[in-house]
Image 1: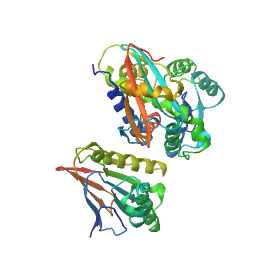
Image 2: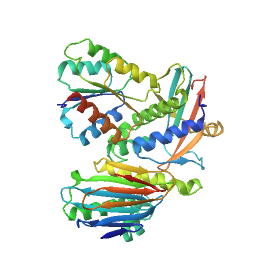
Image 3: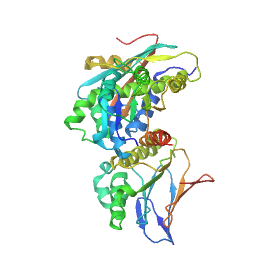
Image 4: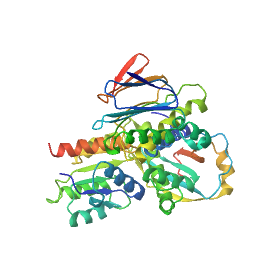
Length: 154
Length: 128
Length: 158
């Protein structure tokens, strides 16, 4: 079984963004707190393996996703309205892609939850940086990727 | 001929993206319908002639598989082809879905080209 | 006649005995457009994903960038009678040519850029040969719209 890791999650995120949203990014080197509101999106999984993933990124990135997928302007009301939903779907696709790699050829099923979201408080950023999360940069936005086995995110 | 298409997904962004790609494939916007889960989809299916259903698997409320089972037991709905579009990681599930009457599967993430290819294959096969 | 598309260049043709070619597509991307009804063919060889990197350079050399380059290619094709909804689109290149991450990412960024532009134009890519680590040479036959891609000793028809 392929090993679950933050870097596998990051690779799955990269693939999801390139294939479906025409966005190419790379591992981030500068980890300064991003500007603007941050959103944390979580998905839990259970079955053959259990645990969860968390993506933390600026809400603005959601608007960029919407703009790329639907052709509206990044600063349009439509992009703003759908930004959270787009980030939820990104987490869904990324988690599925990551789990697909891990469970390929293995017996048993893995079931994913639907995404849950909450505002990420800036005070939590230093702990996130120290947590071993992978940081990915795309379209000028920093995305933190964290996954776990056996433990679900609060 | 495929004219009316129902897109079922709890993500409105994904529904809008699929609508956009269907438009690029030549399907008319007024003939594309949307639902946020299986129950809402069955409501539309009871009120509106639909020629093709594109559905996510896992949604809050009724999922795509349960929706398909409901369609299969209704004479008016059982012949409508269902294509599942999902991020589900379990490859073995795809074979199960086919055995349960699903006509095709598109795995997320997908490129617009891969989507068009599958839809063309399914709609071509329907009229073969 | 052979028409060579250089780096950061656009060429089009309606002459049925022309072959349009571009060489050494590494991290760069070659875009071939063909309208089979108007018999108009065109090719762009661009280096970088977006003119926002350097707007003044883009004004001088629009074909250096995916966005301004595609705008120029399509404008020239339309001027010769091509219509957007008839265009066959073939893309090649975007390889990772260097060992360091920043340089090798240019190819992937170029790939993402052209895929996005083509999608925003409401078009599908007919054939793509993207990525890898080898340079490519691309030939476009104006008479037939056939594209041949050569790379590392292999030949691919599109």
